[in-house]
Each structure stands twice: as structure tokens, then as C-alpha cells.
Image (cartoon, rainbow, N blue to C red):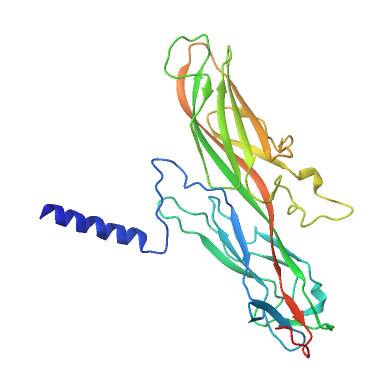
Length: 314
């Protein structure tokens, strides 16, 4: 009877955990949920009519919307207004009520440890959100513009690892000052791939390897939104493929200051070097916690059909 009651209790708990719209995560004691995504984007389709699986808008007569669904699948909170979007691929002035830029109106909070729920928002490219769009220009037969939404947003990757703090002259064996270290990092497109400690007479040296595993491009945090605000006179190329490092715990001095950021190589990888001077009588293990700060630029595409209202584009 006790076994039956136990089984029923386990089943009830499982239904409570898995029946609430989220996916239960098993972290095995880790700090972070993990994953390799920041924000994910998809156009809400169809824009107009879906005839035979085609996304069709008829000029002059059809009303429709162009909007992007955004989900935060990583572990960094995006504040309201911090996500910048730019629409390309169509001539904005050919549409009524269409604007070329947009931003998130509400916060896009990170996923939480325990239950992996994402936060999302539908972002519209409309001047007046109460009215729909129309294509106001003239179309001869049909054309199929590939509309693209470019996105730029701030993001952070957090790293946690246990490091041995002692000189190689100290014979106490409380921890190892050489070799690969276990680590954990947060869900984000910039991922830590290795943490290695190397011995030194009076220094602790830690080498951290990272890689951009997402489909987008990394920019240093600045007043500009990635390449969305590029101009001929003031391009943002000097901030491309760069990020900064913030030491939260451990007392090490790391590469990656605002004035001298880490540069990402063509293969998407980069190396961070951290050091700390110690005395010969020190011997202890401590947690190293870093934040890698950057802007992330990515994009999503969707081709649709704009058709002359007297033509048959089905």
C-alpha cells in the first residue's frame, strides 16, 4: 500500500511540473539552465492570404500586418526598448502605415532555472498599431520581395569555474594549479568552450576560450545598435567582432576592458587571459565568475507575394 501511495505521489508531482506549459530542466547542481541561444526571431505568417500555401498580398485592396515574434531563449534579461529592429527588402513608402524600425515594448526576461519558460512578444512594424497595412504602389502582375528584419540587442554570457589560488612554490595540495577546469556558462550565443589554468611562480593564470556559436554577429556595447545605425560618415565597424569582460568574483584581472576589448577571430573564436598575483603562503580554491558583455546582431527573412489586384497569383 505504501508503494502504491508513493507511486501516486510521484505521478502527481510529475503532472504538476510538466503540465504547466514549460519544460522541466535537470541541472544536476549547475547554476545555469544553459543553451546556445539569446533571442529567437520569426515572422508571423502569412502576411496576407495563404492560398495554396502561398503568402499573398493584393495591392490596394488587402489589409495585412508585418510583425515579428521574439522569444528570449537565453539567460539575460532584455529591458523594454533595448531590442532594436530594422526592416529591409521593401520600400517603406510604398506601404501605408508601415515604419522601417521597431523595438520591444515590454521586458523580455530570461528563462529560469527549474522550469524552462521563455518570454515572448509580437513586435509590429506599424506607425499606428490600431490600423492595418496596405500596399499602395502599382504592381504589374506580381513580385516577391524578400523582407528581412535585422535585430540588435545587448546580451551577456556568464561563466562560473573553480580556480586554484596558490603559487607553484607552495607544496600544499589543496587543489591543482595546472590543467583544464570544469565550468558552467549561461544560455547565450557566445559560449565558453574551455577554461585552463597554467602554473606560475607568483601568479595565477587562467586562459578562457570562447566561441560565437550563433548565426549572428557580435559587437561591443556602444551607443550604436550594431550595424543598424551605420552611416557613410560614421560606420560602426570599429566595434564589430568585439566584446568586454567583467570580473564579478575571484579577484583576477582579465583582458577585455572597454578601452581594449577582446577581438573575435574569423572562425568565431577568441581567447581571454586572466591573472592574479599571490603570495607563496596562499593555498585555496575559489570561484571565478565573469560576465562577457556584447551586442548581438541577427536577422530573419521571409519572402511573400505582392500581386496586382486584377491578376490571379494563386
